[in-house]
Image 1 (cartoon, rainbow, N blue to C red):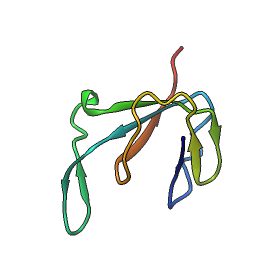
Image 2: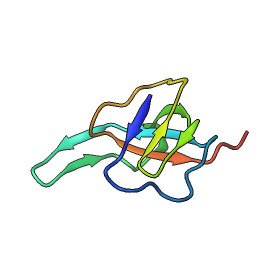
Image 3: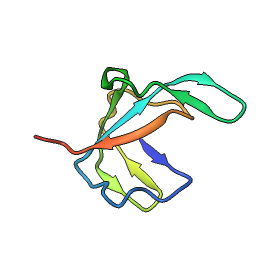
Image 4: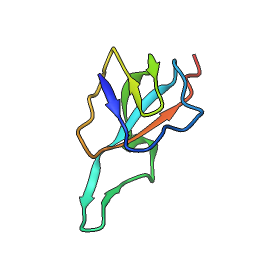
Length: 78
């Protein structure tokens, strides 16, 4: 799965990092709202295996995100 972004990715994103998403909790006229109060609200997409300026690739997708979901990453501590 390739996930493409409108803006350049954070320079800290690397192959081996974990991609996560937060589902939309409310859609509004000025934008979407996401519940960032607890990491339990985040769903693991999988391990990032390719990074470009505007995209990431995850081969072994655990939870596929839908369009408009908030995508974030974390360092893999394994």
